[in-house]
Image 1 (cartoon, rainbow, N blue to C red):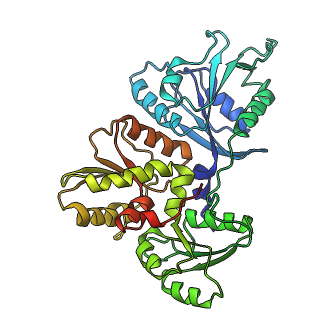
Image 2: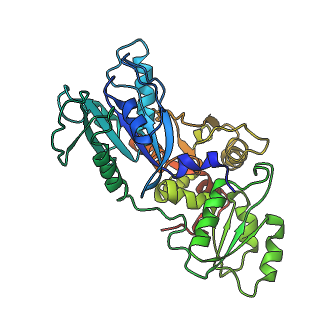
Image 3: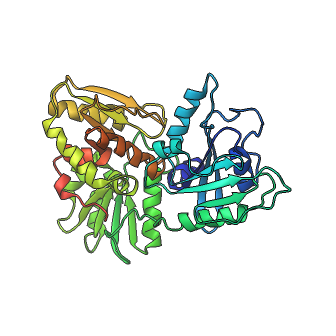
Length: 390
């Protein structure tokens, strides 16, 4: 099964807590989680890098609270801390703006500038005196005392109400239905983690089981034997993008084909934009500059898909003068205007909002963007022959 450390960031609802210094952000996080997650101090700028705390919030399920540095930090490191806060804002499904009761009510214009307009914001006024009677809550503002916990029940209800409106995204969409026969082709090569499956394989397999599909898993070498053992062709074959061409050549005509990375293109990003981005490959100049964006940090391997295989395929198609830059983890340049193409990984280890923010940067600067699976399908000449989830 998947490593527990792999599960939280990619599949949890991300809730960021923002505000000026000493507004009670860290105290609120500690109160909501019931743990001393963040250091609480009257000293301005105590929180530097964002602090991430996974927890279960019923009935939403898994959530990830993000404590951030204050906007009004005027210290020598304030600008660097704000940069980290902006990165955290790009990951949020939901934002909480918290301010002291002696501040002018209203959401921070700074927060509105750095967070996408489709991200809901809950405005909270934090009352520091335990002797005060909290004012009535309104639709636009909630009143709490983060230290005593007064008003937190209403805040949790508001979080649940908003987060509950997020539709639970399906990996497979309309591609399968109950009792369909599905064949998963999962090569166990040098990049496969020893003793376990990668997260896209695990989550896809779990959804197939939940949707009561008849599921069969094989490695690439057993693919033909598996087909020969079946009385009827599988409704859908899901494979690793790296063996797209091998599976396509040998699959039954009636079997639809996709890959784990293509499924994650729809789950985490925008598959339509990715397809358009891949089609720009045909017009890339010989000296094109391409950004490979990984969403997790890992030690590069000899046959690394993003660092080795995709660049090699592109150079074979376009020419050896192509230039490649690689970013990993949370690193992603805000200015991507110097690139001719961005190729994003599947994003299995991060939340959807982080991938959508990267797509937003690319679109706003008119840079085509695609993802690993869609790119490989295009380079293998089968992009128009695979299926995507709707």
